[in-house]
Image 1: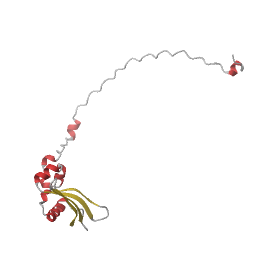
Image 2: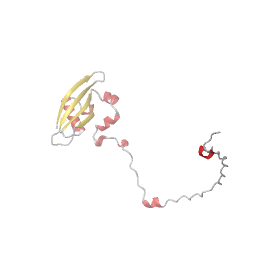
Image 3: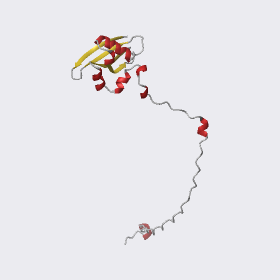
Image 4: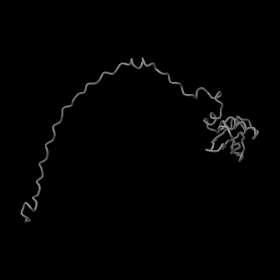
Length: 153
């Protein structure tokens, strides 16, 4: 794997260098973030712990990954500006805190599930039916012309 820096921009306000890079990984899978971070640290002359890879993606059909990284001047500056999920994403698995992992669900034995008492069925109480309201008197229809013999009155 070969990492090449395409663009490097110094950001004095945040005390960091913003880097766009390409990683050529011919014949290999997409490189791990830790490997890319180590090579970027070597090229930039900064400790690997001070580099955060924001984005890294491999294009379909090509064995080339491109990404964006930021190299900070101090650990305090890095922790103050970067979101926690990015800091954890770039850590090796051994260094990730255990508290962040979701607790494992304990499965109940099937016997306990079967032993649950069933709820008694509620008896349905029928309400008395209401009597239908009396229908209004039907409106008488006007006789048609044919019934009158074709005369209008």
